Image (cartoon, protein in one colour):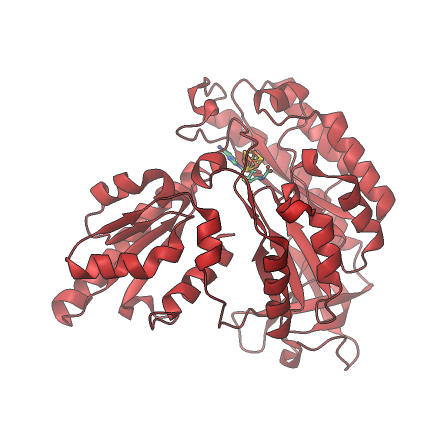
Length: 434
Ligand code: SAH
Ligand code: SF4
């Protein structure tokens, strides 16, 4: 979602004559878009800001040019005043629901040699005010359909930084999808903090998926992140009856222990989750799953942690994200006793990851020898290198066929690693050019 938001900020700034640059050290304006989800992500911003400040000072003293520094995103939303106090060289602080105001904030900061801050919660106003994008979205595009969250898991800052659940209008989303398709997108990933809670104009996420699937240019549809409680019947069925909906689903559970799930206020138990997984597999037998896990939540015992390992074995994931619990200011978790010692969190994370990585490698190894359609949506670091994704979200590297950039091509998979696959293009015709 931060990538999507960053593109939207670039669209907003384009209306006042700014364009994107790779050369930030000579930029007129640097916007640091931030993440508040874990402490590590949050802490990084001050070291980043320190680096940007040096370039600002160099430009101002040696070249007599101004560099405006803005901090955007969820850290700005949560700690805006603190950033202003701790980093006096920051000109603008703009929260995640206020970035449509960037041009005004810039004018205000310029006018009075002043500083500007905007932390309002107005998602509707934001989406109404955002201009249509003039950027090329690339072959794989993001589209935010829903923002915010009303679930209040006890570890999570999202309900405080992104605000209450908000669904965009159905027609507006379909318009944006059409524009993305017309400008070259082959894949659309529908985004939301709680994307399957989407309920714009009385429609569901499944309705959005079926309508977008009618766009001939769009070959692949994905969505994230979903909550197990919001996996409604029509969405489960869509995995069986919408061929463009990709056979990979990120469905986080966080823990396999019912007691920990209750302490996390996840609003369901492990059996509920496993039942959804099995219904999804009935709808689409080759569906691959990923999840997020948190180890060391306050009070988590060894036996409860082992229940997570058991659940992982039962589901058999194709890939996962896993984190040590990090207390976040303002959440109910932050006042619970952070009782699992750091060494134990480290040890549990290592044991969980050993299992997850083995499952990921085994999943990838099953692809060797198969012919898989791969969407090449990114260029690699080296000349001629392309990076792509299979339908199951596995990464594929290719060095030999740069002409496939932006297209889906059939690849014979020759090797598997934990993180991805290697392969070769087998025939010289594109399945679909962007
Ligand atoms: N809406 C999604 C999650 C969004 S946050 C859901 O309900 O699953 C992304 C992931 O960050 C979470 O799934 C969780 O695993 C992790 N996370 C969030 N807060 C955390 C915290 N305080 N400590 C450690 N990990 C956290
Ligand atoms: Fe955070 Fe997801 Fe829980 Fe909402 S559902 S509070 S975003 S973890």
